[in-house]
Image 1 (cartoon, helix red, strand yellow):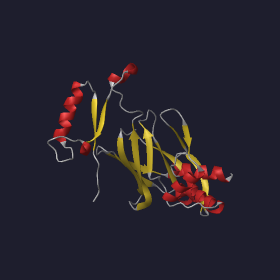
Image 2: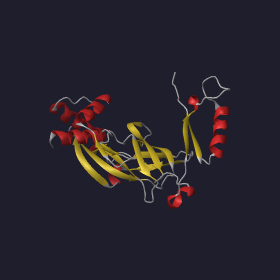
Image 3: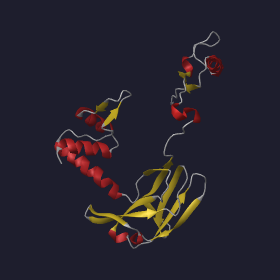
Image 4: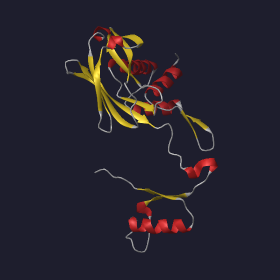
Length: 232
């Protein structure tokens, strides 16, 4: 793997998109300098080939050093959801307790022996043979944020043995008014930017209500209100 390919792979592993398409359909690709600066902002300094390959090797091995990934995102599934589970070979025969806490409050749990699960891949990690298997959830969770956890059969915790399972819809809500190339229009405004004779220079909800009335008279379909949040 040459240096540019290694840099691109490292960016992908870190969740950095290498290109985007603007509203006019033009593709913009990140420069090498931009990629390195984005990585640096994430605490990954790659000033030369040695540091680049070292960082890439670390990112590639990191998922093998924890039994569960921190987060898994799936679209509202029509097929069973599988969760990758990675353990040292010497622990494959040791039973585990698993639990799935659904966002609505329901909790599913059971016991599994890792060696009974389908094997996905095997790799030597830090001079230890590790095996990645596929755990099949007993049922598909609904939309929302759920918590999957594994523990030792005696109830003892496992480091990094917790995963946040995010189930997302396949697409955003599509209003019926937009069907068949329907069109809507409206305004997006900063609430504090509204000016009126009655306010002191910063808009409030009374000003927003007045704006909505004006937009309704003009036939607008929506008014988007944006509010700045300042953390203290």
